[in-house]
Amino acid sequence: MYFIYGNHYMLNISGNREGIGEGVLLRGLEPLEGIDWMQRHRHTKSLTELSRGPGRLAAAMQITKSLDGLDLCAKGPLWLGTAARPTGKIGVSVRIGITQEAHRLLRFYERGNPFVSGPKSLRA
Image 1 (cartoon, rainbow, N blue to C red):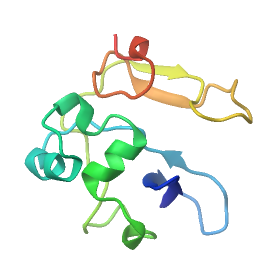
Image 2 (cartoon, rainbow, N blue to C red):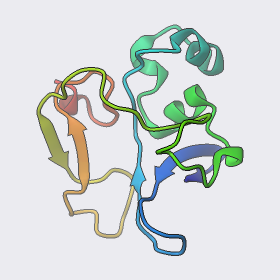
Image 3 (cartoon, one colour):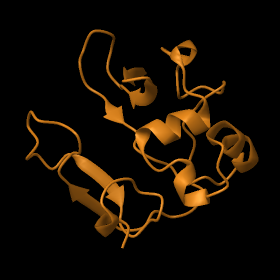
């Protein structure tokens, strides 16, 4: 469920059984609840900088090794819920920070959302 990059934990979610290498790296989220709690962990008041990027998201949400293996479909310390609002148009781009298969369009994001990580052009 998590992996470590440098000194930072990041949230990687797999929907397959153990031992099968596939997953989705969550690169950001739009904070709607628990903002004060996340700001304390990130030491920032900037809402757009709070959880934009995988390392910031993990710090804001206190993602650590202790959460590894959680069922994110069950209520617990971390779970996936339903959208609080309709999603905007979905954009697709190449992935960021990789060298193998870098040309593949496997990065999905909400177009124009100020909480999307990566180049500023994705947030416009």
